[in-house]
View 1 (cartoon, rainbow, N blue to C red):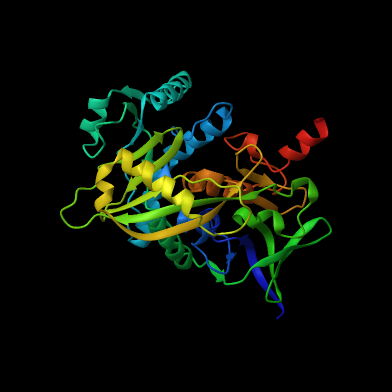
View 2 (cartoon, rainbow, N blue to C red):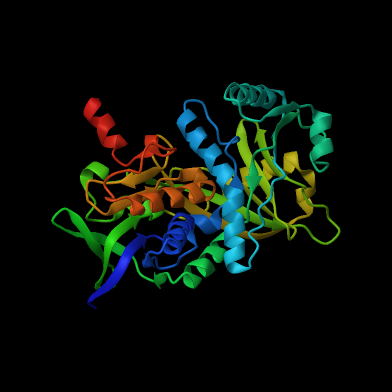
Length: 389
């Protein structure tokens, strides 16, 4: 195979980040190709689709929380644009999230989280047991109260992936079913990518959006090689039989200190998840972790005993040393990185795509378009920390 010329941009990776970047870049007039052996799958397909800037706000991650909040605000327009471009619904829902405590010790932990959220100015309201069950009647009477998070929403991540694939094809994006082994360069500037099955694809700009594999791609300067690692997560997909009630809204629960979430779908399905396992790049699903997850969920929503298990979906999230994404230019002119979104890939897709397109539209991809929400998440930040240590 030879060189495939003619693309302005090659996106390495076809998860939600890569597809969102490709769609928006093509819409801005770029000739775009996406290289991925199975676009729309992987961690994107295994996700639950929560858009949770508040629930995912953690101590010491104020910059990431600010970015997540901005991303949450971008989602209504992104969903509307995607639906208009494809005629598909992505099931964007604004009904908020209930964070509930399984017992009094869990309630102490959720109260600490509530105080942190309120100190940051995030929307969070303490609820007693009765108020929680009024908001979601399927909750167990044994819960110990909780917190209402009205600004956390959800989307059907699989519907989004399908719509993005349609939108990319309609916008003229070339889909290449292969894997990139190396970024090509000459004279300090990218020339394209080398493919695993032979040959190469020429491009003026390359966007590295390969998720947990991003650090394995050759040709990336050591100073900006993304330090991502695979963090396994498992979701279960359930369905309520006819006549069995469904949850009204997303429920996140803390049970004996363990977290789980239950995300209802418009079609009567339910996504159950929250496993986080540092076990390398294997996709095996240990029975013990799944058993704990199911037991915790049943304690919070007892009617789950009547639901059917349809699917067990493992995925590898791209984790980073500080849990923040890695988005921006590198020392190699024309090479941009958009990876490391960890637990917030679905949430951050719209703002990541907007940031990458802004970088592509700048006079030189090595020069950021100004300070913005990604200023604290550039690829060179880890090298800078290492030099200062």
